[in-house]
Amino acid sequence: MTMSARSASLPRVVVVTTGGTIAGASSSSTGGAYTAGVLGADALLAAVPELSQVARVQAEPLFAMDSADFTDVHLLQLARRVAALAQRADVDGIVITHGTDTLEDSAYFLHLTLKTAKPVVFTAAMRPATALGADGPRNLYEAVCVAACPRAAGLGALVVMNGAIWSGRDVIKRDAAQVHAVQSPYGPLGWVADGGPRFYRAPCRPHTLASAFDATAIQALPPVAVVAAYGGMDATAHEALAARGVRAIVHAGWGTGTAPAALAPAWARLQAAGIWLVRTSRTGSGPLPRERSPGWLCADDQSPSQARLLLALGLTQTQQGAALQALFDRY
Image (tube, rainbow, N blue to C red):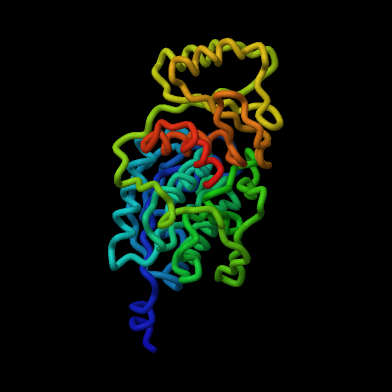
């Protein structure tokens, strides 16, 4: 097979860029402050010429921003653009470069709202592109390898970093600085080894084609907020959020989502005003007990940020407590 014929037979992968540390730059190669999202899509691809060996890659810039600035509007825009790309016959897989701060939110959201079986793979970096030992180029290469692999189809949104393949359903950032920052309480789905992916497990909860949610049918997400528990907390934050018109408040509690008893009267007032309350744990893993606090919804093993997104999606379809609770039990 000639070189041109081999190239023509490679999978077609679109790399959607949104900014983040992977596209960051600094005046120093050894550390210090840097600016996220500085490098353009073409520069990211040019830094990894080996991509041409695994796929026909096309760059599509969408955002150039720090992922800490992501809003629900950006999230819906990203999901709709990826959904449109997935519908194209000339696209076999999609890679999304993203900042790590809200990587888990975007991966979880697309995992639940994309109607495609095509591989959709997020990747990111913990070191800017100008740093010594920058991890972005290798992460991008391995993400494209996964997106180009037929075995990645039907697994929902994936995250590839530091050689591991994670499910968008349960990946979470657990370290502020190290290249192995993203983890999951259930371990990776597989690894990228010898230039190719190897899978060992698959997500069992509904996603993508089996999900009840479709990003292209959602105009906007209802406002849902998160409040973290702390010793001696009062209801100031809750009441301020209620005054701003939130539809629900996720309580990121201790242990199994413990909520201070002293706040019961304030929470009763919120519930009477039609604001949903959700009990979650800030521990990062583990299912919560099935016992329900009266009037509260309860997460299963979803993190506070995942619970926020899942409830917002649920509120676009129903206002019934039993139906909303079923989402946490199902997804």
